[in-house]
Image 1 (cartoon, rainbow, N blue to C red):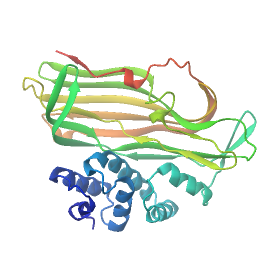
Image 2: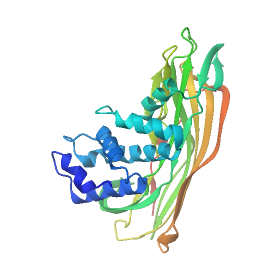
Image 3: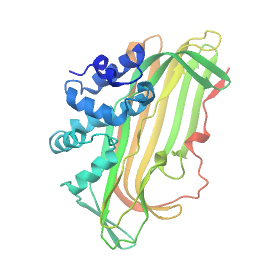
Image 4: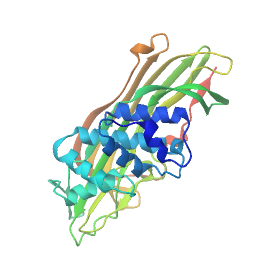
Length: 327
């Protein structure tokens, strides 16, 4: 059984008690804790002993969620993942690398598509979903509107939504340059305090940190070889439990929707899509009845879909929209 107290002895700088407890909680929530050897190998791949553990917690969260979901598929997928993690050594844990290995090691590439008459062979993308939870965290600093806080927060997060996709081309392929994911997001978020409202609303913005790719991640297509991408993240929202003058958090409502396209780039701002996934992030939290709080990611649709996407290069980005505070 995995023990965070024992595991953190590998770090040159001893983590604080809160970080150790958080690591144990994450492993317990993942359901992987009974397989100590697997968990230790996975953690070693996403954190370094000479680097502060607290700074690696975000990557650890995602890796545990990814591993738990793929292992949960059982059978062939569990066998391949266990072998990948067992031999990973000091290499980084990356689902894209794992998927590329699977494509070379027996994964069926049974879907066919074409770009400008050039053939593509595709496996069914992995759609990985791990449900979020409400987490209370102590003494967190942040900024909402003009209110800079350092207090206890409640955060909806620790889940995962990921589309891992790959393709293989013919050796003489010349039809496209990059494989990647375009995601469009719409947001409807409201949090209420006594006399204060925090909101964030927008429609159909390109969800990217580096235009145009989702999370800024794409991969160069190598003719005749497998190519894969798997940018991972999960919607989340963290809010202080009290406002500047002691006003208590009363409620949180979120109704976000997302449309994710797996695409190849055929020219600047022009793409051929071959798979689409639609999903929703919903939250209902009432501070007077926190035990009844609900949060979830729901896949509302997924399908192979061949077509073209053209961007103007001027689309609004999700990062253009900040939390708005009204009093």
